[in-house]
Image 1 (tube, one colour):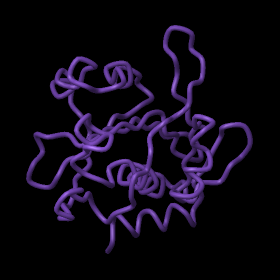
Image 2: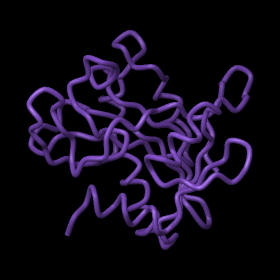
Image 3: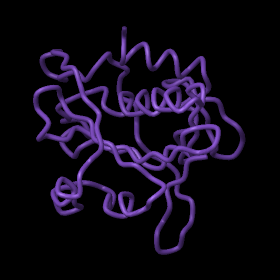
Image 4: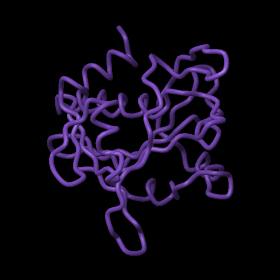
Length: 181
């Protein structure tokens, strides 16, 4: 299962990323140009630039400090210095748990630079699940108002409450969209 925690109260808040568009990379919203992406682990040095002061919504230092979680960055191929988005993942016994997803501040809202960032990060989680022998299965907790959005855009399955999973079939569709072979 996937949880976003309110650290002070340790309550489940739920994920609230919006999947703007499923692309096969990321896409410049003005020109329509597409750029191939890389996903790699974020470093502690890079996290010093990723702060609420610089427009990020979450404290990613808390994520990287949790030994069970890995924080990955999405960048454009040949431009590793500019982080397009981040995802916090935990490999469980039978699936990958999606803790947190966030697009870079310049990839949010009506004036965003690139579309496709959240879908790209979720597709990576599915790919990692396959690599770890979990058949692409991932899970997460959604904010109530976004449950149907994730069903419609990602092919997620609602398991009750705010719990959603992406099963093998939906994972394959996302992976083939973002990682065509």
